[in-house]
Length: 314
Image (cartoon, rainbow, N blue to C red; front, side, top):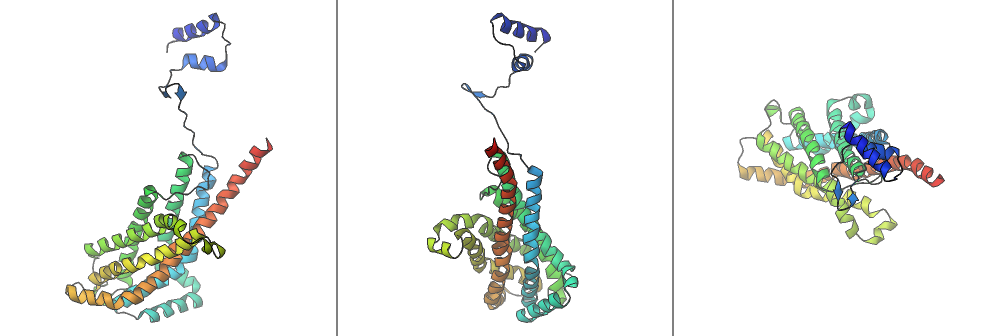
């Protein structure tokens, strides 16, 4: 709007006896944005309060959960791969790794396998937390708000799958069959690992909020239904996803065997590996998910309380 038009608008307001305010002056000089539906003005407000602290809380929660679950997951992942390759029986590998953890913890915690596992789960938890923070910012919602929609599944599965594929390729080369430890990972193995991780992430971040209301109310006497679902659902999914994992490993360890022999090999290792993967999934997405959720909720509630107290004191 030109200066003349602005002055005409102001003079018109004066001529009609309307009170001249700062808002009227701004309205006279600024173009109107077509943001009305009927006579209602649409105003978008984002909940950006404490946004940097909320992001730091997301990272702290993820780091706390990942640090607690990574040692056990490292041990079990190594044991499953060494058992599948024939390098070492499952229980022998697990006991050897536990001995290293307790006798040389500094060496174990600085090792490449542990750092890879820590990276995978810190990143997965942090992305899941960040989706919740973004959702509560844009909606707007309370800052402790959590989601369970497709956006969280796509984001967490993309990050988890990408890092797990890299981690699995490194573990297979470090702990796989000696004859194939320098060979590239077959594309079919990558595809099976990706499908395995999709199922695991879906069962860890999307199914628990759906399953929890279906559980018996009597569980509340022992633990919350949300916590029980967060532990049981990812573990149950391993019955389906473990054969995919074993098939992908066998494609790498024994690329030339027949399909019937591969089926027999997967069947031989299925029960023990399923139990072991349940043992790693329960801390990874069960206890780890519960720890991540509770620490984040506590930190977010702490950030929310001062604002609530300020509003109450007015």
